[in-house]
Image 1 (cartoon, rainbow, N blue to C red):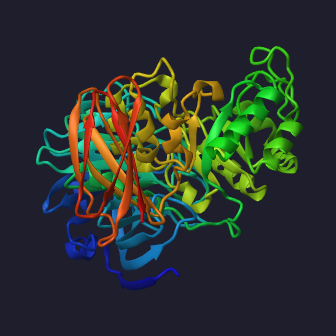
Image 2: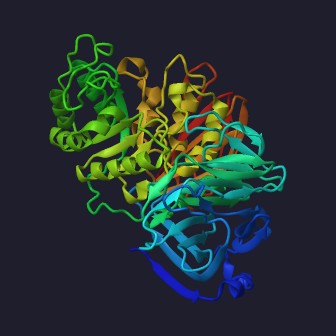
Image 3: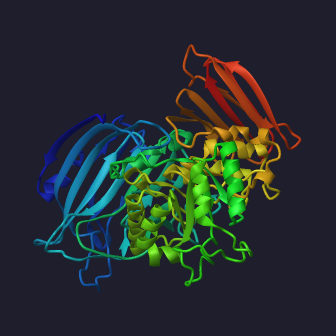
Length: 620
């Protein structure tokens, strides 16, 4: 049961007097380490501008920075909420609750925060109303703009924001300009392209931080561009024309003493989204997935048999089963195999679905955005009638206000037809899977299709994965891999995704030695508890996850060899565990070792360059 305690008190004062009582415009996290405050300040050509700041451990995290949004004044409803404001009220609230996700990286999530809602009016007279809502958690601070329903303001036009993030000198960022990009460490200045969030930061005083967003479901994508040394400002992907009420996405600033804490506290992103809207969730099944590359009936049945042997839950039919995915004539209601994928065109999809279901396996169908946009309302009930369990959206439009709204509505519609969803390509999560947990995963990551090196793989947990699950599309026994088998085995523990595509380019013949992949055979894809044990972006990472009474540990290094020594104090005291470790033997093969351990023991991973170690601990 959710435990909830809410305490509300209000401060409703005149604008001038309220601005002179800073305690009424400040909130702190429950543990007192983070503070968020706001005030109005006169600046050249910008009188009465809203200014906020954030501190962590009494040191600047976000230095005084401007807030606001508006347009050029040429639209139907000029909207300029960055100056000439007056504060008419401030409301504070405290929440102490926990919630339980349908699936996740942990079974129980705290939702503890102190909230401040400041209401502004624009200019003299009645004007309109804008609110700034801020919440201070132990894990980070979040704030958003909100325009309540106002019959006097029927249309809201937003062209840009003036949401600034002024950072302390010498701050460094792990920068990429798109969701599937490479990362590099950069100073905060002279970026030629705006940065994709999450944007992980290393302050000169040793603090780690991350700027990201949550609940970006009816608001354009926001990126961060440099406007001066150590100064970032939000850049909207598109303009907005909407009626009130209108809420922006949450801007989230996480802070921690160690980078590992940023990832361990990433549940904050989901907590900033509305609760689950699906009443019956019994049909939502996470699991392991294998992709059919043959698009033939025989090939599909062979994969089903392999799935039975290896405990794989889903069979995925990829692009080409209904024709060329980009041709407007391709009809996703009919099976018509692209001859470039299978010249014979011998895919009997109903028979493949029947055979898979007879063996207890589920089916996912890929559909490109061109067919989705034309046929979505036809496809969803049709696929449900076929016995399909999921749909993978391909190359969807992302970023603009229009397509953001369309995409999340498509996930809602899929839930009505009992279809789980995987969104591929540039889409990156912001916590919508709390509200619609049929959205099991998404890409938005530079994964194995791009054959990244080990250093990139050690950066991802501290950047992209802060915002949630990512479909990395794992490979094994592929000559294009730049990392070892031990590295690949460990990644599905480190990289969270309720749908784990463990055999993206694999087919049964690629795995002559089944013992090498036995670690994946019973690997869970959702967890009851997660602990980020150690790591530094670009160097190494080690993560432990619990399912029931068993623990799984994944550790990988960058392109350098290293030894990682880990305490096992997270194990239940007084209990014995059987440990199985899988690691590189130095000859290109996987070495398995076993022993008995307790919470008093330590685990050592001697990793070769680009290597890794995968461990399972079963309680005796």
